[in-house]
Image: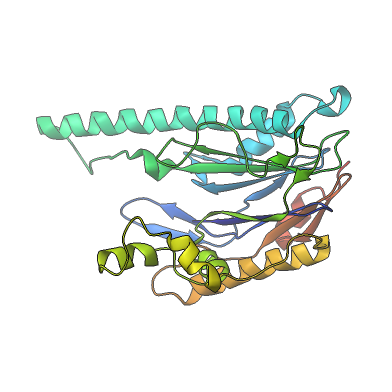
Length: 297
């Protein structure tokens, strides 16, 4: 229950997310609105965002990012790439992720076996891999490059999800010399944002096919193109990119606040601006600001 947004510009990256999280189990569910999903790798102009599962047992994803930050290599002294940092962090986080998923799966199998034998006391445990979807977005700068780099990693595997670390905005040109195309990317609960940017609900195509008004072979994206929100990303200053990031997150939070049912995203926004030399917090929850260092490299 998260919306993460990244804006890639010629001047830097803007990375932001909401603060909603859900705790509890199948019996009781509690929504909290102060989760931390945007983290700075201290000492480096690199920021991490997370979506999906917020906790693995008694550990939050944020606490794992912090643990890795204490153990990480001294990249500053040996040179580094954003890809290397993202690969190392992802290997650590998803290693813990797989360990915890295995524990939950084994406990569920044991619970189901006891139920078959009539020996189960209490509620039967279940395990569904998709319930443990977790994603990392890592973006920032590396020595010798004037362009930002942006990577994603999501587990467990499912249809449409590529395995391991992926480049979210590949650099263009024969050797990447032109840098990444500017633009906006989003992960997590993107329904409201899809409506805003595309001008339609993403489920509309399926509804039209079901009603017999559209065939599965028709290019629905081309049909819907005139309804899309026209945004000129090329040449957008970093301040405007930060304002746009805040705006689309606010729209999504407002949409969820007034939609029937419990909101999937909400709370304060955490938005970081990443340039070649610094990370600047454009928006940050007050307590988090008080507890965390504000400066980087």
